[in-house]
Image (cartoon, rainbow, N blue to C red; front, side, top):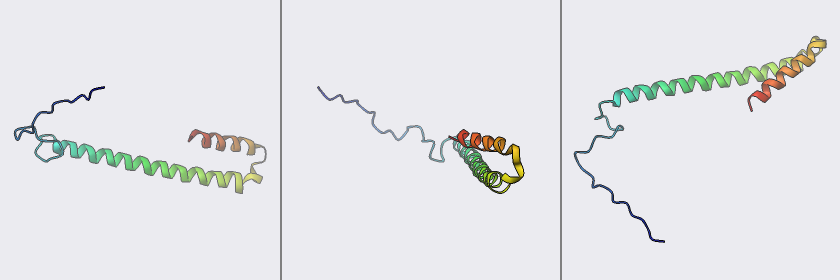
Length: 89
């Protein structure tokens, strides 16, 4: 089988500036958008972490500490906790 070569154009000094350089007209808007996306991702990660902590705390409290106080509702609480645990997978 013969090798296939693709001719590449020569580098030109008049080529369009890359978006990574500050010369591009949309560079400022792209940087703002990147900051916004990173901020949203951070808030979502924090919310996910807090949700995990709340779920763990609720599991310990409901199934560990107050199981004797729940009486007939213990199995409902247990089912809800396990359903929430499987939801994360």
